[in-house]
Image (tube, rainbow, N blue to C red):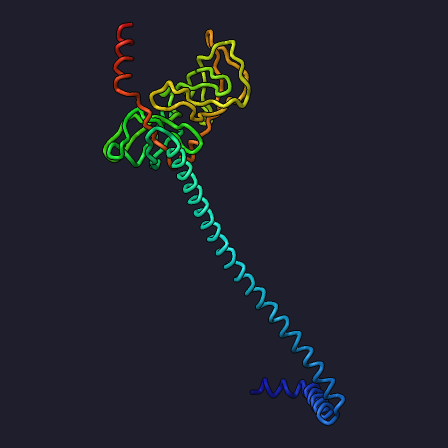
Length: 279
């Protein structure tokens, strides 16, 4: 209490001055219309500035929250769009395979790829259909782009095929433009390329020439696309040449395939075995 009394006594002159100033301002603005209008205008302006600043701060944080919500929604829409695009691509692939099956004299079964290796030395493809669906060993596999493999083993519900990315699989092919026959197999290196050999040295090929199945194989009919000659440079191999073929199928994106029944009639199989057995 003493400290408070001492404070008022010490600053009494200042306090009395502030009281007079306050009283003077009250009398000035209360009994003079002009000063009242000026005071109200100034007060409104100050209040408006304060409210604008407060609204800007609040709006900034509100916009930041809204922006975060929009980013989250955009990410969700992007994911949904990717799923829809994938579904559309799969539907288009199945439609293409069905159209090819309808236009082919061979019996075909559309199967889904449920397992597919591309990074091993010997790669395989597993299908969700098997013997119960009419699939048997030595049937060929092709997707909407080109040849992908040959069925090796079947169970009642599943089938496993040798991928074209398996050095143990060799397919009889020909250069579509010239009709010259060669043997295609994977070199165990780049998954995009295979080698076409057994071509005579005199054959002229061009980069971009289409390579198709020859029809000599029991797995494929004639004319299915396998790939394209990558370049016209020939690597010497004995008395023949080895060409690099860019495969038409993208083995990292296999979804559905057409399983083709191009197996030879039993009579033809037996007579060929008889001839080969006599050699």
